[in-house]
Image (cartoon, rainbow, N blue to C red):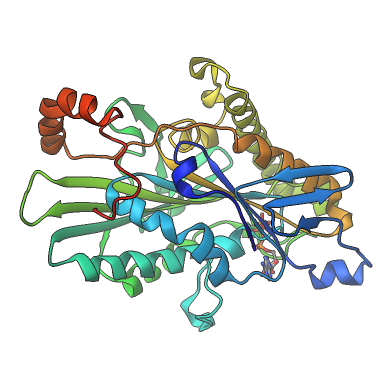
Length: 382
Ligand SMILES: Nc1ncnc2c1ncn2[C@@H]1O[C@H](COP(=O)(O)OP(=O)(O)OP(=O)(O)O)[C@@H](O)[C@H]1O
């Protein structure tokens, strides 16, 4: 796999990992050739006469484990330092988003060597807690929502679908939030994965000509970690890890969608178009107050992750088949723009701790010549 610069140099930019999946049986039967080349030793790809460079490029043969270890594992420490973290999978329908994220996890698959990002991250989070439990008290809760046809649903509410609709709100203190969403406390990897599995069952999928089990909604699985020092109650952070599995962009002609599938496809494309416009504007450095986050629920939901205070990794998923060349180029362009977005990641100190920090803020700021909320990246401290 071809890796780019370290996280230290790019903490304020949205990082982009490109993942190319292998040719699928359907594509081989169709007589497709591969149309994308990885430049050896560089996080760069070439397609037609175009070249694109990202933070990471993962060719076809890369395993789930290698992908996770390289692009995601390091973010777990950031979560425990108090940063909000987002991983966002984007790409054409059938390009490998759900596979990469592991959103449709099913324990019954029993294949522990092929786990997606979520199951691996959850295991790392609880390993981290085990190692640090003597110094800190941890509280972990999870929520799981889907955005389907411009409506948000709480996948863990236990209520009938019609009664699980929730709203998106924003305010200065809480940022983007979903009042009333179910937040379940969890204490182990197994328990968390059970919650993910249960929630996934309620998610809308449907069969199209491009993907037998196509996600027809955008899904966000969130793990919230509250951490408090056992020796100093004022040292406390609360942070969130959002795992976002977007529905795939699709050409209606190719998916052969009609009826309900068609209506879904149109809504999916509208949300993604709004997201594309926001990414473009942010990537071009447009004044933040002119960014049209309000154009769709998807962009409102992702406001903190794109152009906000989160550490964000966008995973652009593509098919290597020449049959999908246009869609692949469009994903590569999208990802190229995303890489230019600058966020302002902050550590989410709890109120009391923040007060103390504020009292010492001026002195600390002057001494360190940088903002207090950007700790020394070399430090291993939590
Ligand atoms: N890296 C990979 N290695 C092996 N198989 C893969 C890989 N990526 C995806 N696949 C397979 O390709 C198919 C489509 O993948 P997946 O369902 O993840 O696509 P998707 O982008 O989530 O699609 P949609 O947007 O329609 O939900 C699945 O059968 C999946 O198992």
